[in-house]
Length: 224
Image (tube, rainbow, N blue to C red; front, side, top):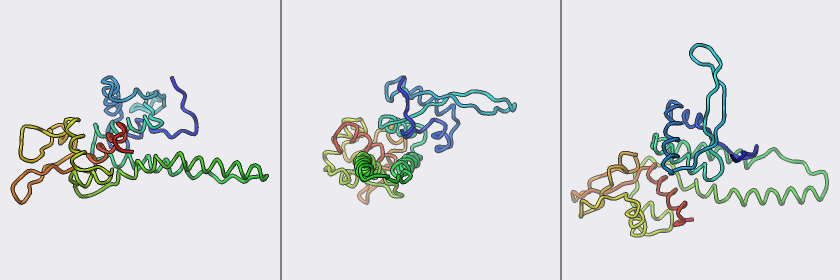
């Protein structure tokens, strides 16, 4: 078992349960099912104490997500539980990262310490940049987006993005005219179908769907 260092950002299954307004046992069950299928890495377990309905102190287990893999996995868990709360989880990770990037000021006592402090801060900013860039793409929107709009955010063409989505079984091939989502994509809250003025179905992505696409593109190296 890997030990989580004190300076690492973490997200527990209890925090996720609060964010998505679900029972903790439902969250842990979803995590266990996804881990059993190999969709996510099995998170580390921590023990916490709480007071039950009888007023007795009992020990409970919760899962802890950490590092980039854990961040990815936690987004997948929330997308499975409540797609509409994916953006809320992303916002929470951003809050944690923002706090970490603003440590208490250190006062150097010598010129050598001042140089070392400047070097450490420069390194921290360099390490944080890719993380901030990744989550900046998961901007919450109240409107739906088409494939061209989503593709533009990743410097891709709509044709390239649609090919990528075809490879991931997002679109149904039962209908030849226009693109229609597979039912699983709609059920997860990732996409909706709207009718054009010409009467054709138009596939539109929700904010949760945009977050899912972003995670897939980045994790598979299609987009930086």
